[in-house]
Length: 129
Image (cartoon, rainbow, N blue to C red):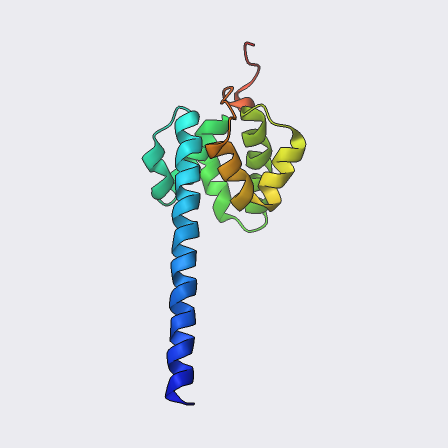
């Protein structure tokens, strides 16, 4: 390989790394806003595993469900349930919940930065309207 090819490929990887880092910061900020809207501390978005625990609390699921995220196949089912509950906790439709399931990197920022209002934990039971 020539030195010019190696140098240019290094620049491409550096550029991709910068884009990846920017997207990661944006997604963390979006989850931070979702937690703040859900009456939880926003800093929980940057703590591994605690962010899943906090998300479970936002939607009204028990904290022990965090263990279920570590079981293969079950974790997919749990994410589907939590995503649908998250949509309902913000008074969004089931279609929005499906969007959270398949395109969470797009729909989480819509919840966080959009006009969505937290209506309370959906899974906790009936809410006073």
